[in-house]
Length: 143
Image (cartoon, rainbow, N blue to C red; front, side):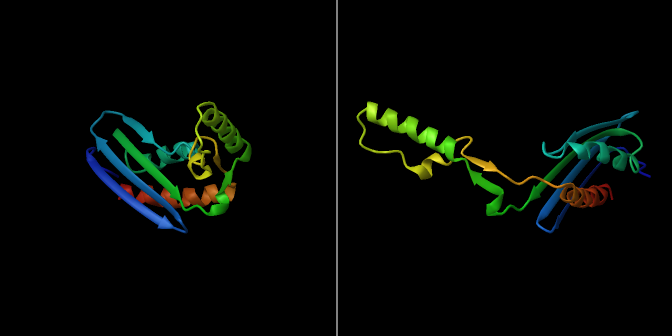
């Protein structure tokens, strides 16, 4: 069990193209108070991390930051043709109305919002794999 309530721990694990990095900061407090920052795409981990922290930390203010990154492949992205076409047509019409000779270049339009979408949906199995790596990183940071 942790005896001092003031401390710092950090750990990072990289496995199968998934990286989980955890940073813990604790300060004295009469009660257990957790402030947890997680990626928006992993809200389910919040209910799993607090009990894990409580196995080692009985009281104190705990600031925990968890970063999770997964390597992506080209098949994880899709160009949304109708959005790209809409941008192109609007810019083409504007350039013609201004008397410009240049047509908008497609390579400049793909960076506009909504043109490229991510298609990768996480399966329950993949979520559990990511949780396993994250859990071990949390435990290392606690150590």
